[in-house]
Figure 1 (tube, rainbow, N blue to C red):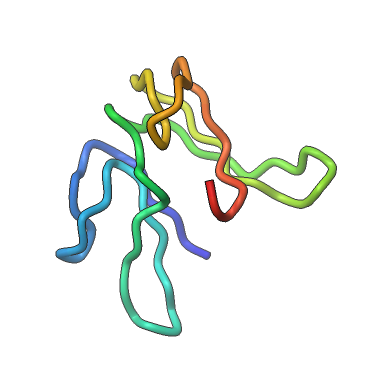
Figure 2: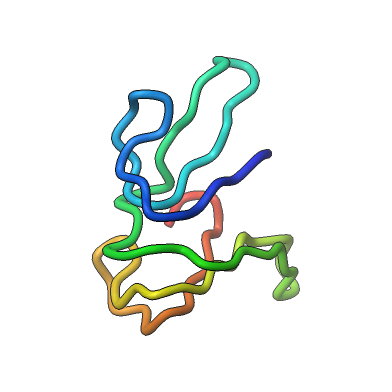
Length: 78
């Protein structure tokens, strides 16, 4: 999966609050949940022991509506 993060609010015409993934099967971008309230500055994959997750850092206070304090992890659904 290809992930993109930044200061955008749409990806390929689809609403996506600062983070999105590319779905090669549908040839389309899709948002990652409710997204973030401010920009993504860095991204990495990390395995916490239950499989890899996308970890993002940036200038945000909320991820998916939950308090995140500049660091958040995506598990595939939230």
